[in-house]
Length: 304
Image 1 (tube, one colour):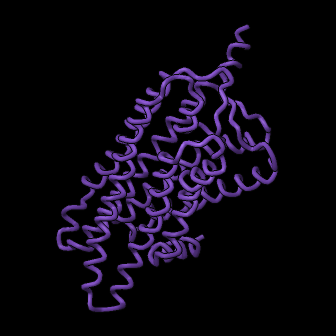
Image 2: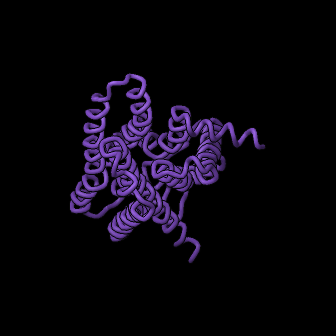
């Protein structure tokens, strides 16, 4: 009887109904590349003395965060695709939700911190070593993590108070905020309003701060007379701008998309962009467009 009640409390994820082999191979490949590439970037920055600057400190934190972020969902999704078992325990679902929201919110704030770092470096270079000192950078990153955790606890607590329908079906392939709200039988209007407020705080506000930073950065770059120096400076910033654009637009859309019953394909695409593509592209974009990181990689390979 106890085992039966436990089964009734399980959530059923409505994903990977067909072509499980293809999904398994794809997810295993993507996850392996995310772990290897991000761990490589993190390790290179830690051991190379030339990369001990605030910009690369933030980049190493981003790589570590992307490893954690993708590990919340992809391994479970891989097991789901291989076994065909779409069940996830009640508390397992909320644990996954908590960490996914935590790492997502932390990354949103960290990307804004990286934009501020580039703003100070380009627009106020004389005061850069004073402003972006080790204590400030460490506190900045710690604040991002703390706010991300606070955001996750808030979401998890609010959704835990809901009553879920008898079938416990979640129209998604992992436990995320909106699909769980759609699976609830309770009145979710107040939570939806709070979700919009939180999305502004953790999504729109950092995005606008980033855009404001880059308006000043581009304005400063355009005043540089040397075309070669201008291109070099812009190349450093364009990598971060690409990452930011992908992450924020996908994230804002993911948590503010129109509610429609048959929008599972839209859910898949937005979640893939927000939770998988960003951790996958971050090391690729930064390493391919960053000469110092590429030199550090070559140096490390020659030592091996």
